[in-house]
Image (cartoon, rainbow, N blue to C red; front, top):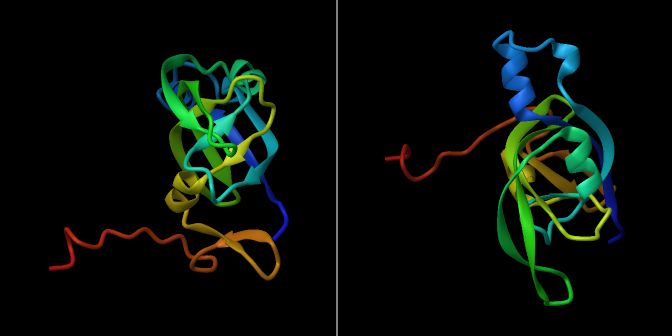
Length: 142
């Protein structure tokens, strides 16, 4: 299977909250629409330092990340970003891989937005069609 890309919009989630509360205007929310590589081998949302700066996301910590060649590297973690794909969204902290300019959409944001890669068409699609479903199995199924 080849590489799958998807157009997503990233927003500074702190700005979004400030706009909702009336502290800033909606047009002041920092956002970018970019092409991301969908990576079902990656866990999280990975952005570049350049995107972090454009969105104004503050670094809030660090975490070790194991990259494709098996090497562990220290990566910065940012405050939350809103990730939007078509009519679906999630809010999560992002991770910056030093020196990388690739944006990766990993399985956590995919699961949060009920998305999957269609292997036949090699495109991002809703896991349940156009219906955005969430699952809560064990705690509520009894």
